[in-house]
Image (cartoon, rainbow, N blue to C red; front, side, top):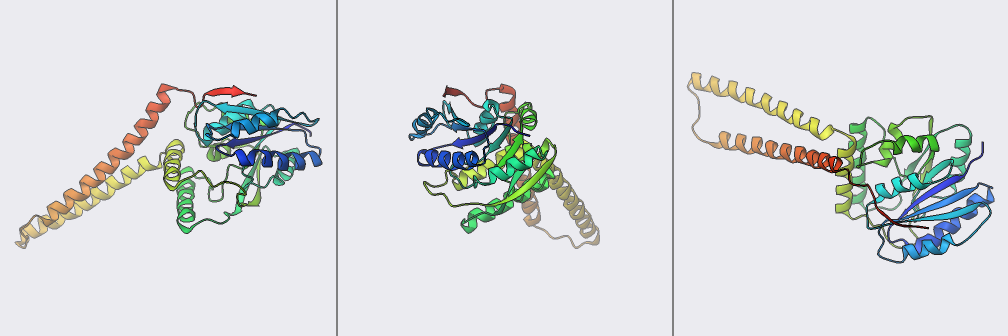
Length: 308
């Protein structure tokens, strides 16, 4: 089975990595005679990323071409991936980072597995490369929560995937605005396999993900793909109710046995605990209502200012 491979590369302030990623991917795929296109999505970069993409688009080769999509502003990586999937013309699509932390030589192995009949080829991390302890711990907590909430193994998940056009169409048919690509590509099903890869070090620049942006990304995706936080409210309510019943029995026993103690310590502690649970619960509900509000407005996931 033959087909054109569309490689989707979201880019935000990656001007030094555009040429390098093109050269590395094009050489590997061309050497294995795989017809391909590279789809770069400029996610509102403030450097010369778009200019670099425009330069590449002018190159004409027999078995490859470059497409550039420019957003009107920064809409985020999930939006960039969705745009790439929507505009890719290939029979099969691969998503990877343009900083080459995802090894491009794995694309050949992925493509060969697709030729064997697999609709989804997941790239799973053998190791996460060099990361500080706080970042690594935070990532581990996030993926454990996502695994528990979605009932899918997300512990080594990544955006590095190869998807058949049928799978791409299934993902694009999902109407929600707040997409979580890593989970969506697993949720749709289809015949799936995995390949392991080692995360490489960036050769140029540094990660655009701050600790705060990662926290927001985690909260957004947990809310987008799971009702688990809402279920926590019910659990907290049941625990509080159980505690209230126990304290009621204890208070009545002491009252009738004549050993009741005077003072407001217990009352104050109960008020603090219950009010804290109530406020956290309102916050969780408010977050979900905000997401519902975003969905109801039906604003576009991204706005494209230019295509080349």
